[in-house]
Image (cartoon, rainbow, N blue to C red):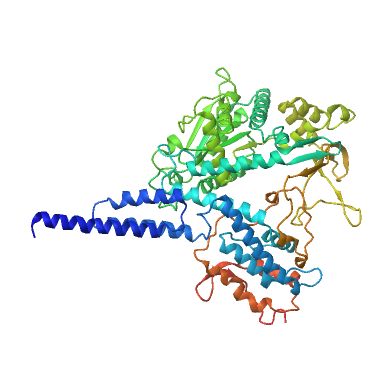
Length: 624
């Protein structure tokens, strides 16, 4: 065979191998979202072009492991929001069918039979939602049962978990960064934008009418509160201005501090993969833990700085903090020294740590106010107002702000937090009430007047004065019981008590209310402009639930669910199989014994070597 023929033959073999390998990659990508498929193909092409015969197998192995790790979450990551809604309805119906069977095993004033409930729990686990059963009380168990049968709750949790998981996968692939998509991927930003537009349309259709006959859409009402970015930004500016006035009056110097996580938390770092590829939320939790330890250290040294914290992302999605702090002049050096020591406690000797991990800028009043230092970061992270360009991303300021809000939403990160200040909820509540109708008050008058005129400095001083000898707080609204007429705490559709603030009150040391300002001025009836009932499965009388449908959204109540399933295989379904014999006893006192038994368990490896919820050691004749 001539050299030319050999060359042609080798080219044909290589071309055939390339086609076969490309086909293999497509098989590996089954079940991945389209945008993620595109990124994985790009990664595969890059790895397959490396030198050596093992390049293509290594590229395939990378894609295989990456895809398998995502599949192990059991989340339907390839689905869009509409498809997730369909899955949510079917899952709620499944749980409803399972839970309805438990009615036959219930006794008066008892829990649903745990045997059936565990089957419903495993339906959730099959969809990638893991329930932490440890420490669950009977009331929480009942609420959990109702959540499992609610498609609205399912839809919200699936959307949250899928969006977070897919975005983190893109970060791991290097799709988020200064030279790629800044803060979040374009696909995730589009997904959040569509959700916000749909939410806005829903609010525009919903009408609220009060007892006086005044009617407005919820979208109109939302523009009057802090949901409106302009109002939110203005309120933050007012509060920071008030803090600066307090500090000036007390002679406290101010400091602008930037806190950044170690390099191993950054997706652009070479240490990132070896450290486990943490998500932006993981990094934020690290910073929160650092902050909690620092606050405890400050308290031990009798240090009480106050100010505001802003969380924003680097271009690669890794969060960092900006803090505006004031402290007593003679104690400022100690406060900052402790802060720096804590910031550099982990990997403080790595290259660049001294320069980038913790920076301090003294606020010089001759060069500008403290508000000027923080204003850029407030605007950048809210709506981009009064700015032309987001220099971190290169986008326009409004576009950059939208991406930052999407990043915070996906990773569930609180962007702004005041430090050592009165609760802003009280400020907002008092601003609702008519000042002239409360003129006879003695204790709350100064506090109410300061809130009414928008003076945060006077509000903070008045709040501190009231706290001497009294306790200022809230009074919750009560509603009449439909059967007895007795005033009781309102509950949500899961049977959990709702806290609806109706008044700001001052209580004496013995708990007696001595002054009250009513802040809940109207009763509203909301017409959502659609069928505002739960799924038919919820309404089945077989469940034996009394679910009052109200206008509260399913996400208001606290949940014990996590976004990501930590189990590596579907074998945790064995949970109910292992407990079946224990929970079959017809006369078992489940209300008294089941919560304690479940609370003592934990996820682990069972006798068959499978991941499952491991119960405590049971007495063999339990329930007999």
